[in-house]
Amino acid sequence: MVRVSFQKDILVRKDNQNIQEHHAVFADSTFFKVFTAHMITGDPLKALNEPNSIVIDETTALKYFNSTDIVGKTLQIDNADNCKITGVIKDFPRQSHFHFHFIRPLREGYGGAEDDWLTNGIHSYILVASGADKSFVQGKVDETIDNYLSKQLEGMFHASFRDLKVRGDHFRYHLMPLTDIHLHSDKTFEFEANGNVSYIYIFSVVAIFILMIACVNFMNLSTARSANRAREVGIRKVAGSTRGDLIIQFLAESVLMSYISLLLALLLAVLLLPLFNQIAGKQMQVSTLFSSGLLPALIALVFAVGCVAGSYPAFYLSSFRPIQVLKDDRGSVASGFRSSWLRSSLVIFQFSISIVLIIGTIVIYSQLDYIRSRKIGFSREQVLVLHNTNNLGMQIRSLWSRSVFRHSRRR
Image 1: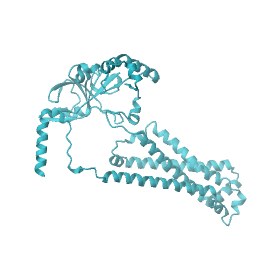
Image 2: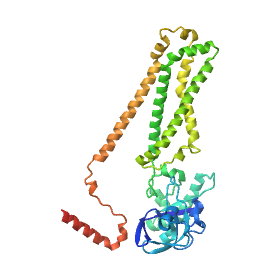
Image 3: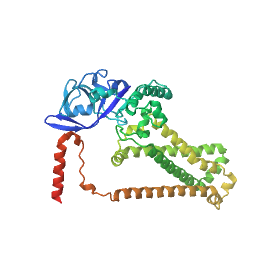
Image 4: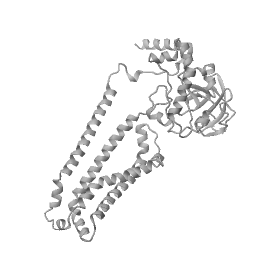
């Protein structure tokens, strides 16, 4: 297991200037036993054992030293601590739920308070064996809490842990799989902003609706061309083709068209991905589209879509009788389809979904426009945000008095 605590923004000395850096943390020496962070230089088993040691990532090493072979050199942190660099690691993957640039020993951030069980500023990660029972591990965690944390709670509230539970008070630690943090964690003090699984569900439903519209549209267009292919069906049946052969043929055409559409869609996605990342503020990579998990799922999905979209045209066209279609001079086959209740139902279904999506788009746009244009009581263009003013100490009073004085003079 490893404990990780987020450190406030730090000042790193470079030449004659202090550079403000983010994503600095304190961590136990077991950090590199729990997480598979690739270390370029240094010993991962000893990197955080020494006092005043620090591990930095590759980007930071190149930024301050133009090299990754820098083990043994020092960085001055917050104009006070001279930290010895004991390791350089590869940058964390973009898909990680944290991206640390500086890692220092946890004992230097908490000192004697690192055994305080009531401290809620520490993230604890537990590495369990493959196939471990979550409920069993949770039971062990609860047992540990009852043994250690309960003593400190009793000293603080002057009541037993059992009495607190009876009153409805609780202090719990819940296990959460690492892969669930980004979309399912709503806890405060996360290392980075998380996503929201609700958005995934909403976009998935919208995508399914759009896909259903496309399938229905394909059915309507295919069966609308039934008059042109009716004679083909009649001739094939006269030549010996069975209805099953024709169904397979029409389904194969639909599936083949779906796969051609997939290739075009992947090509467009690759070409437009940089523009999408720029507009949406994301960092998606092309390799994600061709990952071992996504690509087989896309192939299976396209096959299913092709079968669903081509099912009705295949069964409808293959049901034509040869003598009926070969003698059809007045277009009775096509007119019969136009009056089909199923076709009318498909058209109504298609337009209904389209109208729902359009209304939803208008409502969402109106809400966003309202948020942007609503008066919030101050001018956004006249706001100055100062970060880490706690580093100013008592000088914050001088800064505040000067800013108020200048503001009053402007009035």
